[in-house]
Length: 126
Image (cartoon, rainbow, N blue to C red; front, side, top):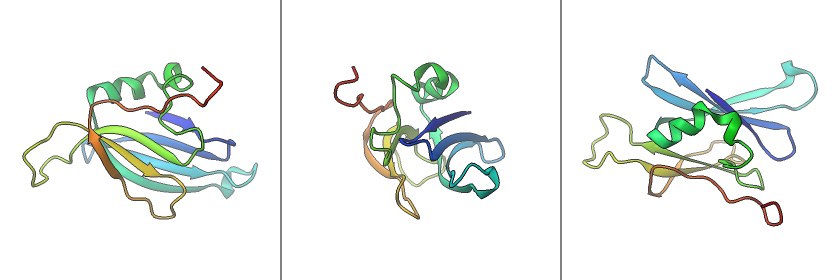
């Protein structure tokens, strides 16, 4: 669906559609060397994107520089997702999520209610 480079160009984060599960999934790919066979890929999280989040993913190449979902340090990924269908909750409105990309076993964190999230540009760039 979409891909985003982390600072330094040695890590790629991408979203892929999982049609069987009816969701999208975040993946991290660490590119150790110039040889693609040395890459290490890890699934990070399943998500059910909000309408606004899906729009950004659909047109990611137009938004990647101006609407950054990875913070300037390359540590945090943010997005908006509805809760997993069938979860034992009553409020299925979208939430702003974050995930620590430097963690070996990252776990998404719910930050707040919301349908769209991006990081502001680094100081001096906007």
